Length: 88
Image 1: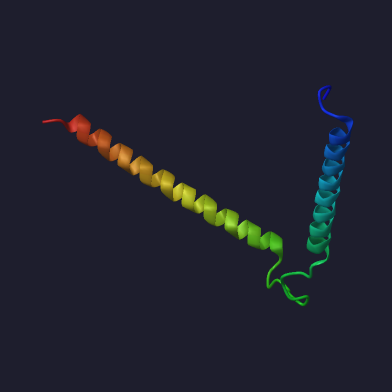
Image 2: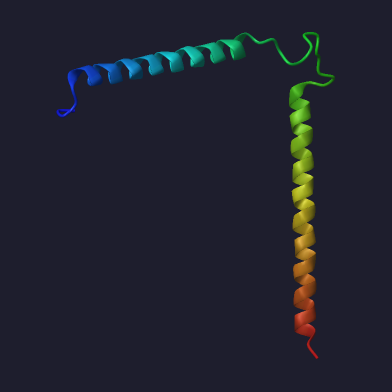
């Protein structure tokens, strides 16, 4: 910045400060909007079952699916080995 005149340096710094303040103002406004926006569900929304039971049910379904996939892959592997070992 040694080659720049003092007035252009001050003007550039002033522009950067205004851009920073504008960014902070927009960010604060967006954060306040998101913070104070009403919930997306009804206030009287109730779960039919406790949440922990729902999570346990989902986990049980995932484990059953993984077990079924594991069993299916073992059947394919054993069929491939028995076919290869039988030979012509």
